[in-house]
Image (cartoon, rainbow over all chains, first blue to last red; front, side):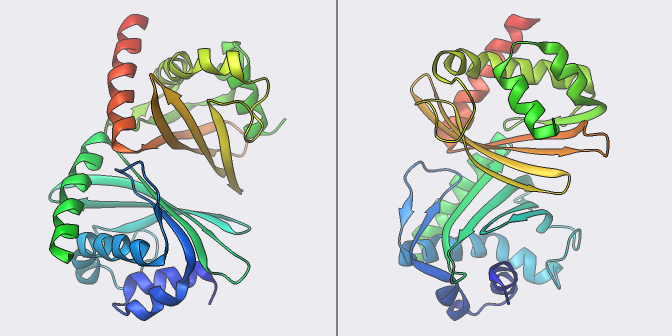
Length: 141
Length: 141
């Protein structure tokens, strides 16, 4: 499997070992809300697992695969891949609030993810994610 | 020139005829702030010209070309192109606030832009753009 296939597989599974294997040790995570880059595998895992908690229940209920346009809630709607970088655009709804965003992913020559950036729109989605992610991260501590 | 080259050229120039020529009649603009898609060439031009007003002065002062990493302020830092879609990632600063965002652009077989979506991070950048764009759009009326 290539890096993106592995990422889709991680999203669908609940196996965190897959995530462990997919991230480079020095991966950097960029949040849609906070300016400061989150450096390293441990903190990146925390953020991605938190995101999975926020979106995850919806996914496991409604999505059998993460193919385009499948399921009424979280879905990837566009994929632009070139070399070692990809953009995955998604749409979802959390607490009744529409979220449209992108995962901007880069990986190294071994296929390990070195940068994971999430950006979302509109404003209402950013403020909702801020609120929800803070609650989930607090719960995880 | 292909669509992206034309877009870079529009950004550098102040010639709005170039923009007129580059957009499809039924282009849709998606704002980083507002949910509602803005449909049609006229309203899309209004938003893109407003964005150029917000970022423009910085650009014309600091950027000779829109090459990667050139100039201390507005700059495109990543380009992922595949088929008729492109992601252009940018960084800039407005009123001392750091803005990191993407232009997600799609075009038709004639090279005319059919979709232009802007998404920015972090939260502070979204709220700043909300405030500034409202003021600029009001001025333009």
